[in-house]
Image (cartoon, rainbow over all chains, first blue to last red; front, top):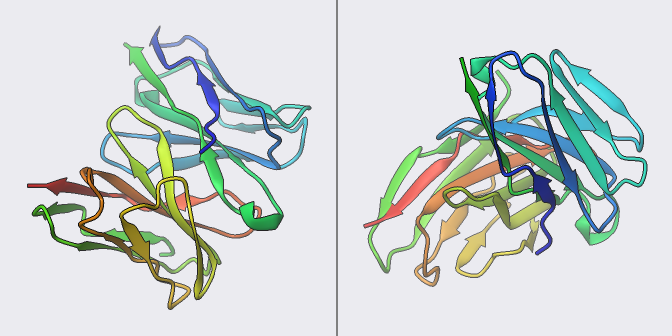
Length: 114
Length: 111
């Protein structure tokens, strides 16, 4: 099955630094989602994007839905130690037999050094 | 509180046995999903259901079965035909066009 191309695969940063990660696809999505997963837990939804070009913030997190509908990025500003985890992007199509089905990126492992 | 509940959190299975993982949601969501996650990997879709009494295979359905007799429940059976079942299994639910919400996961180990 198709997977999204998420990069980078991992990041090691100092506390206070900004972080940026992105996802690209060869196919169009109608919804882009960003999740964070901590060890042994299920992913938690951080931000949902529903319109091409949409820029949405949630505290120190900002995400954008690309104009082509084939990409999205997530920025984290002024990182703190509790930002540590795996961040996943996910794309969702609407209509036809793929309605509601999510396709995930491979994840970005974020490590924040105090 | 509304949410999605998976049980058990840890499950051990002997080779050749079938085992069923539970997933219940009280969010009144139409769609439910099962994903498999292997160490250091992303999530791969096993099965999904958009409505009661209907479900579709995902990308890695072989060796798994599901049922959707009630809106709230979407149990996953890992059969003996699944050759490498040890993994972290995640259930999710969503409303059409909205982001999916995940349960806490079940870690299945074959012993």
